[in-house]
Amino acid sequence: MDGESEKVGVLVISYGSRAAAVIDALSRSEDYKVCLYVADKQRNPFNVKHAEKHVVIPDLDVGKICEFVEANKNEIDFGICCPEKPIIEGVRDVVESKTGVAMICPTKRYAIEGSKASQRYLIEKCCAEANPEFKVFHRTEYASVSEVKGSVWGFLDEIGNEVAVKPDKPTAGKGVGVWGDHFTSREQLFDHFSSIFESDSDVLIEEKVEGEESSFQAFCDGKRISALPDTRDYKRAFDSDMGPNTGGMGSYKDNKDWLPFLDKSGREEEEKLVQKIFNELSGNGGNEGLRGVPFYVAFMHTGEGAKILEINSRPGDPEILNVLPVLKNDFVDVCFRMIEGNLSRIECEEKATVVTYAVPMDYGGYRRIYGGDKRVDLSGAYMLQKKYGDNLRIYPGSMELREDGATYALSSRTVCTVGIGENIEEAREISLAGVRNIDGALWNRGDIGASYYIERSIKRMEELRTKAKG
Image (cartoon, rainbow, N blue to C red; front, side):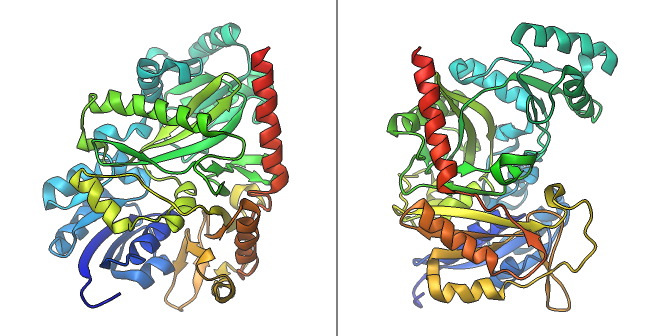
């Protein structure tokens, strides 16, 4: 960084490794001297190290975040919100109206992940071909759980038992139940339905869609969307996609914009569907309320085309971690362009990336209980960067720097390693090498981006396309 670089102050609202990746991308700017103001869920060691000012707000309360911005607004040029909770609660609306600091995230109105039911109605309106069959069971329409049971049975009689049951409200990917995975009888299905219904949430039942999943993300300046390369997330806790859903155990990206089991036309189909949604929300014009990453879309690719499983209005965790380390564009410049409304095409290096999460012993039910030492030492992984250089990134997540100078694992995904390579296998080897050199009572999936996993996805897509052709 030379002495003539322009100084830029950036607020980052942080939760997990996603924010560490954002901070890393900002810090690597060659054109700007970046000073970071971090509102964090805990004392994340990576964020503390890089921040000009760091404040802990455990509940990420919007009012407290705004107070932090107000106290530093003369030094902050713009802010980025990474987690969904403050976005849904309107952090952009509050911060911009009270402090004048521009925020990179959708406004409360366009935090569309706040309601899965609203998403289904939106998709039905602008691209119904991407919607599975669904029905929303509104709590206000039924006096009791027993009353709603007849309605559930009636819908299952129409579309069959092969369904997914989802809460209307966001649950970080952990509230979804799927026939064949989480229940195998109607009574088990209704037990899952009831657990959601009784927790003060409307419930969706959707046709179970068979296919291969991809994650689509796009930056947006309100006038246009600029798509990022596709990624593949691994939601289930254990190898071979066993165990409960988690926040995501890892993900991979190929060295091109689409995944190995897709082709260019599959990628173009994703872009066309998301463009239809953008056109609907923007009024076929511009709408700066959509600024940020308003479309982080989970697609299921079937033999008959792509279906949308859900839409989120923030960067994906872990999916954005596959992309930010290989951006060709200066990320600070990308942020300014989003705010100014002149976003152009996003370019990435033609590299593959693999993200592997290391998590606590009791995460995902790996152990029922764990009462041992929770200290985590990342020095071995950092030492490995001497061998791999920038091709290995280490992003602490649910991890805390304490007064004794040591770092400790908390309850969620502790730390991830990002491997960057010429192909997926090379990137995977680097990511796994990083994880293996972390000292602590943690565990991880070993099959993120594995060649046999990818080959299975390719074969499955071929079978689905052949079946669809008849």
